[in-house]
Image 1 (tube, rainbow, N blue to C red):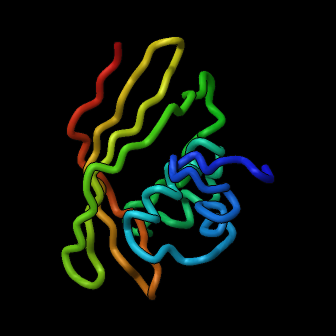
Image 2 (cartoon, one colour):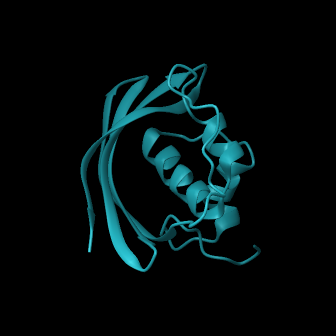
Image 3 (tube, rainbow, N blue to C red):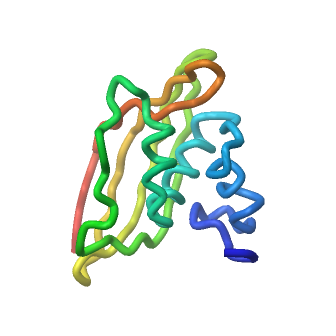
Length: 131
């Protein structure tokens, strides 16, 4: 995907943005991990999503190849709140289409840093809507 803009919406090339994290570079903070996880959903990178999920809450699989697949349209990070050195929350809205209908997922996600790496713990869905 050389020269492709990163799906997270940063405006940077994938290789210089979330692609570095997908290749193994640790995320510097919970916000960057959240953005890289969104990009992984767009790109179908189940391996990365599972690797960056806290082991206490990680599912066995995600079935990203299930049909129909959502068409991801964009990400807006509303807030990034560091709680201490190893805990943070990120509030975001992800937009997507499924079966021709537009949806948005508004979630506040919890992250924890374990052994120097940020991991997704879980999230509280604030709103999920379709039109």
